[in-house]
Amino acid sequence: MVTKHAPYMGERGYGFTQAMQRARLPYRNKNVITGVALFGFVASVYYYSVAAVKQDDFDDIPLPPAPEKSEK
Image 1 (cartoon, rainbow, N blue to C red):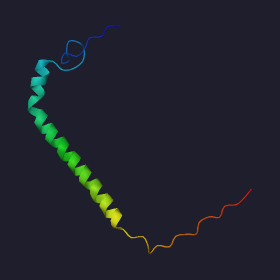
Image 2: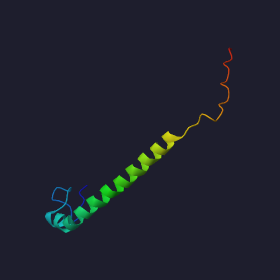
Image 3: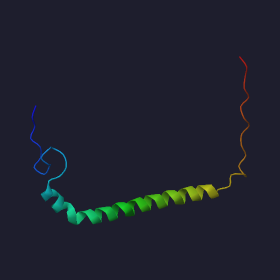
Image 4: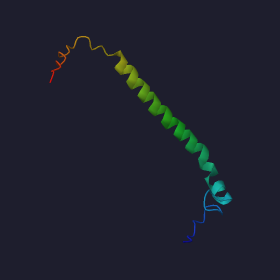
């Protein structure tokens, strides 16, 4: 079964043509900057959350007694 590939795809059916690469070039830097900014934001929220939970002191909360093992 032979299918016609999209016109922006390379000759072998994968990758982009030279024209498509040139058309996407102005957006590449903006996309990289946006990706780095999003990753930095997510990483900082994760780090803040872990650091905030690590500071909590649960010593004043009583623990229930451990269940006893019953022999069968």
